Image (cartoon, rainbow, N blue to C red; front, side, top):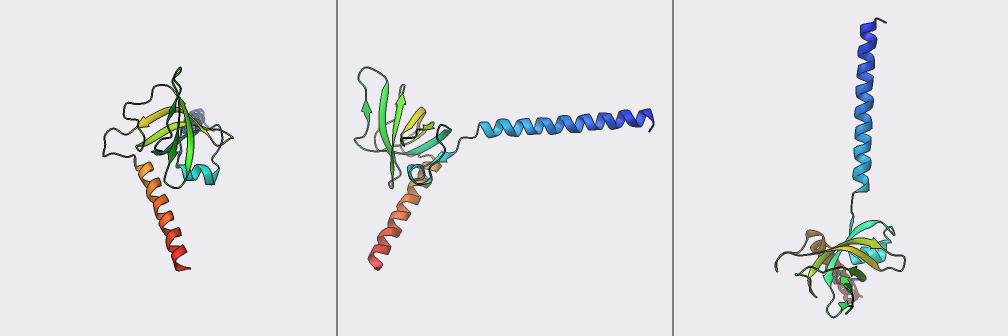
Length: 154
């Protein structure tokens, strides 16, 4: 093989290897930063991974918000009208956070079924609900209607 061809082959192989390595590293980094969305029903039924950063969304259950008077600790329940999950959060809750409103939290599921939130995101106006929360509530309502209609048909 001529020296010029050998150099070109080495150059092409190095570029191919470098491109492959950069794509592999990029995919690995993206995998580490993906946050999956779960509804309360999926948390209860599907057993998502413990200790992994996920998003949980739903409606804040009326009368479930409990705040510690001495700290910024807050506990509340999220529901999709099918199941409910207790959420703990330490920090300042958003101004638009209130009972009966749709929110999305980001945090980790614990082995006892509770959810420790590191971030709470509230909707930005009275007409908006995140698409994930709206879909979860709609699915839960359709499942409840299906159960009711099956009970009437018996």
